[in-house]
Image 1 (cartoon, one colour):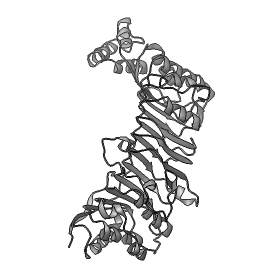
Image 2: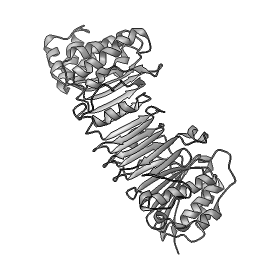
Image 3: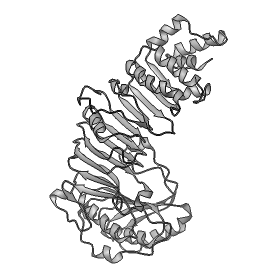
Image 4: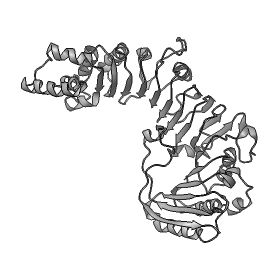
Length: 459
């Protein structure tokens, strides 16, 4: 059975697929479908995942794009789900398919599309026909240059059904992203994956936009300018960006009244602005410099660097109603030997610390004295603390983690009762976990096994 006939069979209803498999088997690998079965196949919405073709044709085989051509060209639509993630367009022989497939996808009324150009190169121009796919509900693009929209009018009718838009290492100009947001009134999720500097300035707006993700990505500035239903702003940390002295990305919150989940906010790589206020180490909380809606905050900080410790205090002042605080320790492999116990002891009361934080998770614990000083501060000040979890960076630090927690348990805590846990290293982040709004806390990734637990009773 060849690849085209296999995919035709897969796209049919269950009974039809089984019957067709028997016919093809009895025919000894017939080279064409009968007119009857072809009519049945054409009457069903198309489902095409090109990974299924690889069993017959490697992606570099000319038969691979030829098979995709036959399927897309032979079906009248609608195209329910098309995933073209195995194609390599880096040679002249494949350029015709790069121009042909978006046209066929638009003509077929594709609804769910994954279109990824396997690198190298990483800058293949995406034909403008992709902008004619007005039936799209989900659009995932990878290693492509988004087409120029400067001559196109913005309008709600361009992508009236689009709910998810994901860019994997794509180049897109500021104006083109503005066009997509203005032309997608139902857009709920926007994601950038391994994308740096394209676009440079991101202006988030959309009446239905609920979730924005930066997975190992960033821009010069992200402005939440008109996102009344935005609930989640998720940034996966990028380690090497901390090597520069200058801020990597400005994150500005202007209009996001429903924002509940925010982070990882990096004390070194990000500059936070709330309205017109730049949040600095000495910024005081005022009505114009706080975001009361946020319930879950995640920070990344080197607790052995005083300027970053100061920024943590300033960040906490900006979010008075936090219930869950995640802190990822960014200490280098060599312990700093620095801690700021005196700073914490003299720190003025912070509203969320005094009244609302119930859960604290310290990620990537390395055993540095600065981490111990920070945890001591929290246990002495967080009045409502119910759960404290320390996540090891390496399972070889188990004994050190146990000693730390046992030592913290000796003096009285501010909270009445708190469950304290030591767990193994966390696993890799999963994109769908971060984007799934049914998961309340996307920063709680799968950890290793629980290694140590006790319940601390306050005085």
